[in-house]
Amino acid sequence: MIDFSFSEEQELFREAIKEWLTRNLPMERVRENDEKHELGKDIIKGLGDLGLLCMTLPEEHGGAEADWVTTTIAAEELGYADISVALPVFFLVQASWGYVVDKYCTDVVRDICLRKAARGEAFIGIGVTEPGGGSDVAGFKTTLTRGDGHWILNGEKTYISGTAECQEMGGGYFVTGYSDRSKGHRGMTAIYLPFDTPGVEVTRRFDNYGRMAISTGGFMMTDVEIPDEYQLGETGRGFYLTMEGFDAARVLVSASCVGASERAMKIGIDNIKERQAFGQPLAKYQGIQFDLADMTAHHEAIKSLIYKTAWMMDQKYQHETFSALEVAKYISMCKYLAPHHALDTFRRTMLWMGAYGYTKECPLEMGIRGVMSYCIGAEGAANIQKIVIAREALGREWTRTR
Ligand SMILES: Cc1cc2nc3c(=O)[nH]c(=O)nc-3n(C[C@H](O)[C@H](O)[C@H](O)COP(=O)(O)OP(=O)(O)OC[C@H]3O[C@@H](n4cnc5c(N)ncnc54)[C@H](O)[C@@H]3O)c2cc1C
Image (cartoon, rainbow, N blue to C red):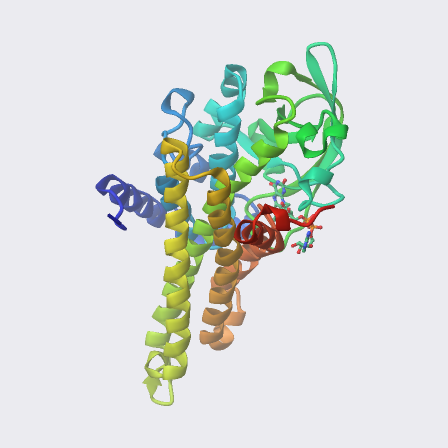
């Protein structure tokens, strides 16, 4: 039997977040955050109090033990409220990478970072991209060499979300490096890197043009000593842990984009009902209606795909009814479609606004700048999603070899 409804608990959860965000994060505040380049301590504390930060962690580790469908609801609502997607980034990076760190870490890491991150008192992020490129994870240069009871980490990471927040709040990053390069991607190992460890130096903050309220930066790691108890999972499993984190993050990215595009449509619809041209509201013209119909149809199709995928993730983790690769195909379809759908929705609804849509008085430009980050590549570029989809559609023997 197929049931497309949310549980009563999930509906109440959505209403509670919606109500909190309507009160605390109106569009004027989103604009203020965008201009001030900060999320605001009150908002971060509020998310912590609501139980939204690191909500996928078990309760005994400080989380809300939320399933992926429920977490996806939160990501969608945050995207609806903050169309610049800055707050969704802060939320989803920690929900997904916090989940993976918690799954494979020791209690020490939980105590120094995760419990605090769940209260909004620390930040847990993902630091994999390197100056040589982000898509080719196995081609990274960062190394982990053995010391006495610790790893020695050397390398550079760049275009990393939340570096300024992590410096300010404390916390750290999921980082991978080669512990044995001769083994290819099976020679990568993952560690938790506390950001205040000696040898870690923040090299820059990028002057991005979107999602201004959260930072993107880079950092060097020079002979950084990482105690063995900060290792995540087994030696040589770093690549697989990275893919597990990306899978989780990509569903939540997609949901945030769908939330943001839903808000764009709402703003656009309000406008076309109001705005008169040639003696009638714009909404009366079929040229406008067909545009709306097209957006609505794509929106519903992509939203359904996202919730189906979140449901598949729950099935995979709770009952092992789907393999990781089966779910990965759906996840990549979401991440491929949702950011571009959001970008297209912002572009089209901005056109409905006429000249007003070209001003900063109209909020839509924050959305177009924000979701562009996910079209370009944050949490994985579009072509990489297509590679995963095609690999699963064709069979692994058709994967391009190096
Ligand atoms: C705002 C922002 C925040 C980010 N935050 C983080 C973060 O927190 N942590 C982190 O680790 N990274 C982060 N990233 C980096 C992101 O993960 C990378 O941008 C992404 O993985 C792509 O890597 P790249 O930018 O080096 O592009 P490249 O890998 O150099 O790719 C460039 C282009 O080539 C295409 N391409 C690459 N390989 C192929 C192929 N085989 N076939 C066809 N086309 C291909 C890609 O689709 C892309 O269009 C962030 C990026 C942005 C923009």
